[in-house]
Image (cartoon, rainbow, N blue to C red; front, side):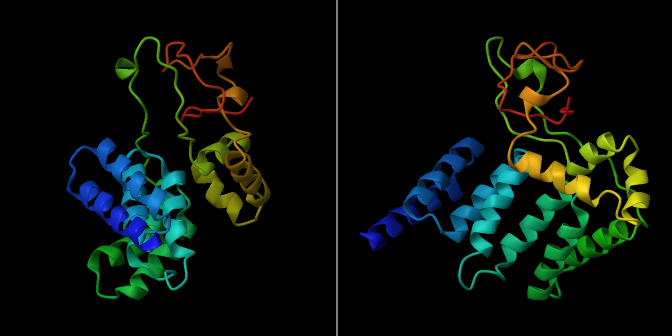
Length: 231
């Protein structure tokens, strides 16, 4: 039965790889993982699709499921893709760690080398961090009666700067004294537990978002967007 499930999963994976529509691709890889939850090809491709949707936390969960498997801790695609997702989340030191692990698997890969160089400069404070383009649903594309339900939190560094009432440039200074470490862990924990969500956002009122960019959009209290700021 297990072998049959694995064979059927491969069929769904092949459909996913040949499909052009991102949503259908995601659906096919999901079907494959229902039959073979540890399949690295399905997990990696699902992770890449989630990454493109701006769902970096969920993408990393896919890569971690690969890396935690026996003899898979050096799986290059998962190491590289996890590093990219961490970089998008502005967790630069962690991103550098995984990019270096990827480089060990393929030392002559010029693309990985460039990422390592770039991340090293950022971590050492020798290169400015470019503002990240936020991945959001445009208001025009949101149906009138549709409720925002996505989980797309702001970067931890963004929330840390807000909590510490300083700019992200100043955070580099504070890191030298370890002043932000406790707050950073608390913020990450609240995001992991989803204690930070639309329901605890300063812009939330009567299940509507009052942020200037949303035009009183209806929201799920368990969702979150890049504009989130705690009450």
